[in-house]
Length: 528
Image (cartoon, rainbow, N blue to C red; front, side, top):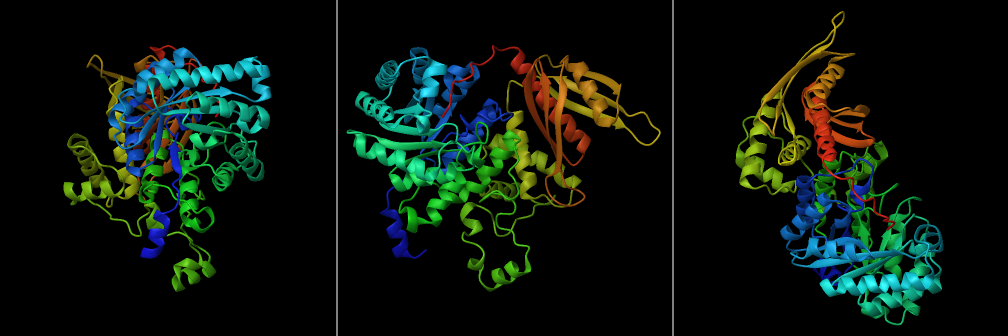
């Protein structure tokens, strides 16, 4: 990009990027995160330079409240938002959670569509307006920056939606978010909604118009970009498109579409695009939800070329088959391969390139694990480093109950599969040993762990994949177990797939034990 082009881009309107990975994204089935993991993602989002981080829904559970409060106290360069329904207890709780933030925001919502009014809220239009206005006013008494969302806006009658939006802006809302809650809209339909509001809400110039689109029809990004063309100036999105059902608008797709087609959208974001790929990898690793290979921007195949015709074109001129430079989204043109002779400085440098700025204590722990791994395999790749970092983040969780001390298994043709497992109780300090047989070494290992920990659970899903290529690649296991009707995810990684399986199973058990001692969270009537 030339200097003249850069000046032109700088003069363009800014689209605020509101990241809701830690709130709506975490609502993806199986994507539950612990405190340490949420803080790690929040740090990465700050490095990514998003404008707003929606840290959670504080009233939903004590854990969510504490996570929002911790993020609010840690983040310095982004607005930190907390979600609340239009009820006093929700708003007071949200205000308490973000009060230490440098730039706090309270985000209140109330359903407005006819189907929600009739079947969920059972309230008339006048009552909905009253609830919304009172909610915004109460939030405003705690915080100057208040966002309001009319839930299911895309299925709300336009005259009523206009009334609601005008009323909440009058009450003090500084951002009005228009959600396509169930992914029902199309680009033309959504464009018409935004244009109608701009033309018919008398005080619309006093608030920023935001959009929050779901992907049920695969149109979340298209609808979000259509809204930008119609005048919206904030997009709510998530890393890797995580979210309820089919997910939300994908941050990386929205940001790179605006950047790549600045000639069409004539606007820009403040996102540091070189942090996109590391952030995507971190979120994928911590949530256990893989990114599909052909995913736009961050998928393994996004910048891969196999066709001979394509390869010939790429050799002649990259622009023949690539409209973006992979380095612009943080995918390195070449990878630094580390080995057992690499030092701490080289490791720190590579981790920083991957988006991980670790403190000395955590770097020491990663380096220790790196040396152990480097002794097991010849080359340590970026993907290996990502898994090491995620393991250290998980170990930092002070709520863990058990850790794996040792594991020994016997299996083979004509041999009864047997496992001997030693676990340490992190609350009491004692080491407990048990042995069991099973259908295979992994089944025997799981049986031992269930007996030692006293958990009654059933394995529902088990997924094993290689982190990198080669015979010495680390195996990464993601699994789900069901205990007391609830589902818990676990992940583990090792060059030994049985050990990786044991780590993943124990991770899920620890999550189940945490849940057993706490009240069940409130399920948000959260239809953004």
